[in-house]
Image (cartoon, rainbow, N blue to C red):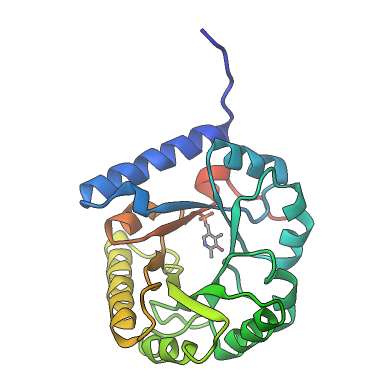
Length: 236
Ligand SMILES: *Cc1c(COP(=O)(O)O)cnc(C)c1O
């Protein structure tokens, strides 16, 4: 027998993929419709490369500076989405390196992405971030305003709205979280029905290490997993 020591990240990756498949099947969904994103904040590139080599083809980056320092060390070209809060003055550093910005949380940010993408002749896929629990001190559009905002995005020729993203309320009970995820799915349907250029609107990014299976049951198409894949984060 061939001996091979699997690292924790490889084992976790396989396990999470299996759980996603199970959750999808239980919900009558095609497991192929769900992407597992590896959330890389604080994780060393060597470890990120283990995830990439295990088959992970999507990375989620939160911090511009950290991303710029690390991205050239990644093994092959996994797709990168930006998922963190993004200051307008940093947009120019990432527009050529990411395929999607999931954390669009203001019109001002949308304007800046439009301007920078026009310069490099690129159409950027974006998600609108929704503050689904209407939490104070949290980024994102309120559920009440997000449909109107989605219509405004039509005016930006270099932005292509793909759907919605949310970060559930930290510490919420499972049933509460389920209601937020359901509400997100309904918002996606609303946005799709109210926008004329809607053929691309089909992405729901929700669910993290603690609740990605629930998110899959409720319609997520991207789940964003950090600690479940790489182990507990050590902030320095
Ligand atoms: C950190 C982070 C995640 C992943 O959280 P884990 O609990 O480590 O799975 C997902 N989404 C966003 C926006 C994050 O900042």
